[in-house]
Image 1 (tube, rainbow over the protein chains, first blue to last red):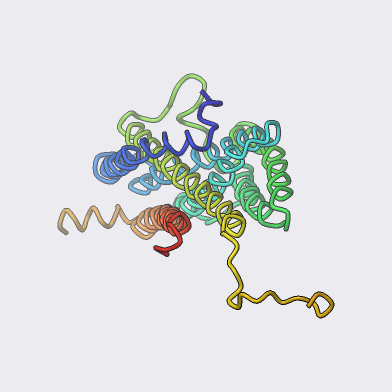
Image 2: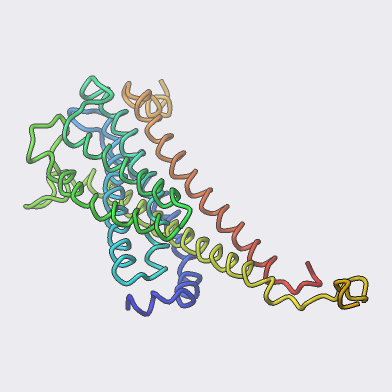
Length: 258
Length: 56
């Protein structure tokens, strides 16, 4: 399956078919998710209406981690099998992951101020998510840092793999250390502790974010493949062009040969 | 206070709830728009390069 999709031409054909319905589904699910989050979900008995920030904050955190897994897995494939499509996938996913991480940090800060009385605290969960954001920025910077693009991509892939160690730290930081951040309430052993009236809007927004990520990933990968094809055409253009005769048909010969 | 006003006030947390939604959709909307613009530009570029020389 992976090998079949790894062919750029086949990827372009399949993604061209998948992209329009995926885009429509993304808009529909996000619209329903927003409706549930803003109108249907009840206020929390302790946090009141501020709990509605959760519906944009928590799915952003999920996608920040998921996007990093995609970047790391694609980087591993690119390093081991040197497949260009894997490199393109990693490069396309990194800015998306950075955007989701930024949304997670910013909305978390906006949630923290009324609930904890502070915009920011250097606790384990928040600091490890900030490190994730810097890992994304480092990956993006490294891919563009070298004149030899292949070297840059290789260095960025190694950074992505090293950064994987941060993912369990983010996930388990609330269990391993005494943090200001609340413990996991959805993906945990023993099932979610969150009430279904809030869980379903949260899962709907999560699905909407996931669909958005997949849609944008396909768009960015298609753009990158088009750009690569355009570069190849530009390089091949002088070779394909037929040799033009000089405007003056008389050959310019050195004096010895005249 | 009307129902809409009461809802928009978000129980006194409007100054935090609405900016959170605005930040989320501004950032995700911007990256979606940038991705789409890049894709359209790549299609235009490729189309221009693949056209026969006379039509250029």
